[in-house]
Length: 308
Figure 1 (cartoon, rainbow, N blue to C red):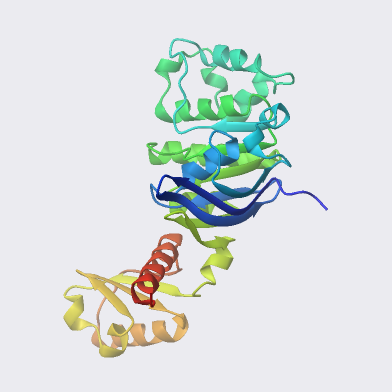
Figure 2 (cartoon, rainbow, N blue to C red; figure 1 turned 180 degrees about the horizontal axis):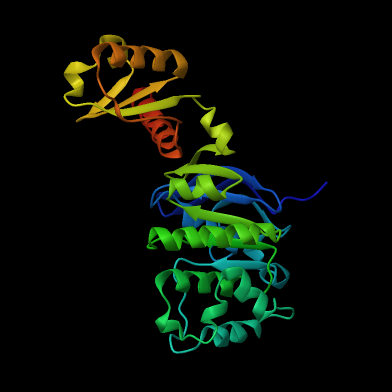
């Protein structure tokens, strides 16, 4: 039986009276992309730093490639790559020069040409770092993280601050790393990023994992379908049987239903009979944003009404 890359049980981290991580459990299998997803302040970076061995946990069990990161064994460090939110390197060095410099830190570094290929930096090999675009600079951060040819790669919010084009390029690069068999722990607060990249997702909020599983498993949480359209004066025009399902903001109408076919039949029959156009009509499964918001709101409601 293959040992998981990461195993976390009952993990807690406190700073004085403040609990940053409040007792979480998850397992990451070798060769998969696992996303810790949540808003700023949810505890994502704290968890990463505990797993990386930078800070000590308050309590709980943690295993990274079979090692306890608190003991910081050299065998573990040589098998792990870390990409922080910001990496400080000499901006006047060339891309190839800084990768060669980092290669000297490892006994068996990955060939420089292979690193340039997988990160899409081959054409920038002789470019000084200060002349790189934001997306190219982020790819260089990843390049430095994989110099040692790690089994496990930590990516801490790899696309924060990037434009949509650069984000897509970064996603392609991460997918290429997965194809090489790397295990990747990704933190992000972009829901679409987790949907595209992750094999499994943990929804983190205020130091607690609200839900964890594949995208399909998370969507099965409520098994809801979202129907959206725009309609002038929507509040006063939609019929009662539709308004019961509807959330109306301005002219935008959003219907949440577990019976999409019958709901669509009612909606379209009414629109045809009244000769009303439904602008931007779309039908889709619940997004991670919607799932996450419902989970958080559900917990807040429970906390407000539960007896002391």
